[in-house]
Image 1 (cartoon, rainbow, N blue to C red):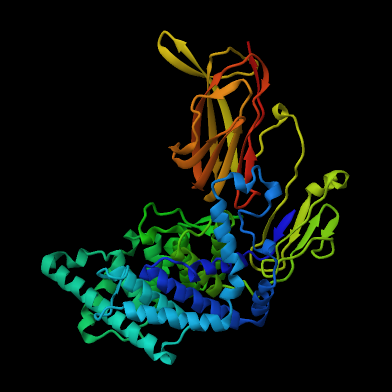
Image 2: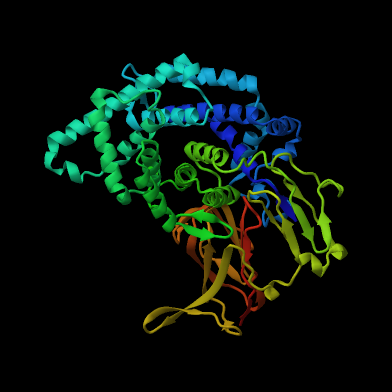
Length: 571
């Protein structure tokens, strides 16, 4: 049995990814500043939190194992036999350096260095390029201004106390004001009759959102006012046509600028369209696409902020946090923006997740599990993670009943595993939120051409037959690093012998052909149903166990499933 009392700390452990990124684009450089500012604010916000970071500095290397490296004994395959060894090492390194990240002196020096680099990259007109040497980039510039506005609004930084940062921001805001006036004049010139039916684009909606955060520090000038008011009024009219992300932005903007009725109408509409689940909390069907305003983690983070500020809806906020943390359980946050937005929203909405750290009470059968009492069972500072096990005769039927009492307001999670030996063909199907079904077919030649028929129980195959294996994967959530192993009978040989990267059934994967099985390493498994097929040839006579197919998340081994066992007869 393993348990994590406060998974919110896993979000904090993702911050080194931002602060140490080697990516040279200007947006990532600002995200480093964002991460360092958040980190300093977190450390200073609560003495308990500071004590956790101090304790992390003293931990042994094993304490910093990545999610991929943890629970090696519970996984169907050792990590060294997967293509993900380097990912595990890089994730461990991020965690190992977290004690260094939260050193206040280092944070202060790092922030000044990054600000100096941002000032150097800023162009005379106030914009930033995407990469040094490129032309001005409006979205990059807008993202930086928006990030500064967010940090200022939460008291993480103060423009009044930093003249250099204020001057840099003033130049960028002036550039963005100029761009919105350009948009407005172009629209008046090219489509004067269609102005009333114009629906603002993502850049204009993002501009209004960023501007609303900094409007007290930098009021809208007379030259910009007509353009600003036009786009604001059109946003108020046509918000329903936008993605969830942009609707959340519009609601926050309109609420801050006094249009509360429309802001609340947007939030009521979003709430009506939300999905609810006891385990996953409150979330939305994802908008399909690759645009920045369709990213699922960033969308959830922004809507969290909107429900907090516009509606003060504490219950919805806590339900939405569940979804955000459950994504961290089975996936990596892929990008700097996803990490930054998720950490920001988790920390600044609802209750204080990090400070509320009462121990969760766990009862397995009639036994109370108290971390620290059993030899070798230690609790990790912050997350409250611990693991314990029993062997052989110690295991009783009553241990199948597990009770968790969580005295905190935040989510907690864990996993229970039972490992035992069984004859392969007597194994029955087992599933979690991840399920796997294995079907066998034989391809027969008929007068009408080849026909594929299911292999029935007791059916006799013959050497030379072609067998098709069909694997049906179902997942109710997005997962990263999923490994599928399909055993095969000794009588069967794969038609395709070469290992390598493949694409099939809507998935990209590395396929490894071994002497006894076919292994699929799926880097990204989105929520849904997938079908994989491959052919085998029958080469030997006799009675054979065809084994089972197993699937497991390497990131969260509690999400696993296997098919039932099958017996084959060949004459």
